[in-house]
Image (cartoon, rainbow, N blue to C red; front, side, top):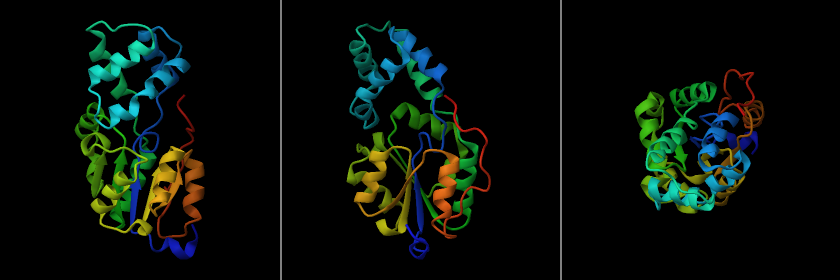
Length: 223
């Protein structure tokens, strides 16, 4: 991405998890892993195994968590399901205030903004109820609502239609490399978010059309 082309950016489309919010803490992963009697590293793999199906809305919460329990070699008691659903939402609800402030900054500057997230219905309800800053998005694309998931080309195209720009005019930001590659494949510009410092550096290389966050938090991680 060079400075000459950066002036063509008319929209910024952001992922939610680990971009607009922090990663779950080690304690949060361990708390949930304890329900299944496995160590946190093993639990994260079990959590991931059917997650895209859950994010796309193919699996209900009951079906998803039952599958995690089956893969862990255990069964859930009825009272554990509501707790797991609550914890699963809570650990993805630690907003990153600098990235939220940057969202507001670019939106107020006249650049169109989109939210494009792989997210199950439980989390969608939470962010809409709790985060008033969602109003700074011109369009929101949630996987469970459109029955598509990143890195499927169709979900990027859905988001582009929502922000009403061509792929070449949009900058996409996501923490996961496959999702960044998916955006590049449909013709979007894309940056992988690994840290605030790295993100500021990458944005500065774009030139002045998309301003970087005005400050960088000293907190580099929560795990």
